Image 1: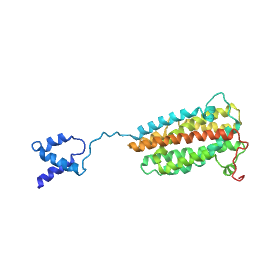
Image 2: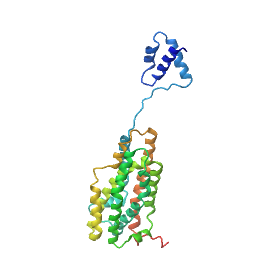
Image 3: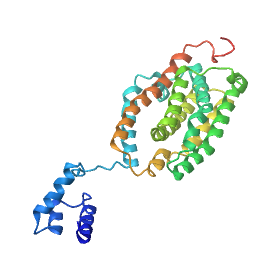
Image 4: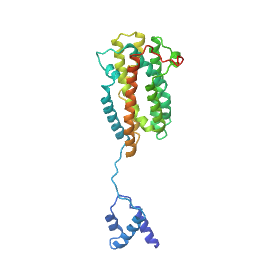
Length: 295
């Protein structure tokens, strides 16, 4: 191959990037010598250096998230009628048992205190500085305020921080915390996809919960922090953290999206079990606190 031919060959190969058909390339470089062109293409193909052009579907981060959100909502709606807690808390006429009302807050206290275990890996998310900033803003704004308001309400019914330190959360509460911690460490993008759903459902549930507390006329010392917590979450209603995060993710490949869809089924089951367990345990429990020291 002489110098001139080498330059032509180099240019020819550089243009074989999937944007032009073989016919177009043949016309550009070898209109009068198709045999030479065919020989080059044949040798490249024999050495597995050619690929057929396949149509590539680009799954943007936000498109993938919206699909996961739709699936999550569909799965939750299928289960909500069988979940006595979620069904009762949304009813404007039903009255939750007092122990279930208190148990809801106790388990949320345990969940909040475990939050650092699954939030911390997200705070160091390596793929995007913008995502890290969004997570840090959320962590700073919500974590301490939620914990203090929940603690104030529990103090009003005679439960102290020291007593809670000697209690065990329900297995389903720890199950949800452990699952989120696992995903935060090993599937950080899937974990981030759950944040918007969790925040939205928590906001709605605390709004319903606040009204349920008022229906049974609990002490204002208990209700006021709950009302304040519900109102603070309502102020965040327009903001979906997951959507803000996934707008920063340019592409999610098909295999990853399918894996996330599979994990969504497990996530919704764990979430549903969390609230089912609150009803099942506290509606029949004689003691509110599951003390470690009593074992």
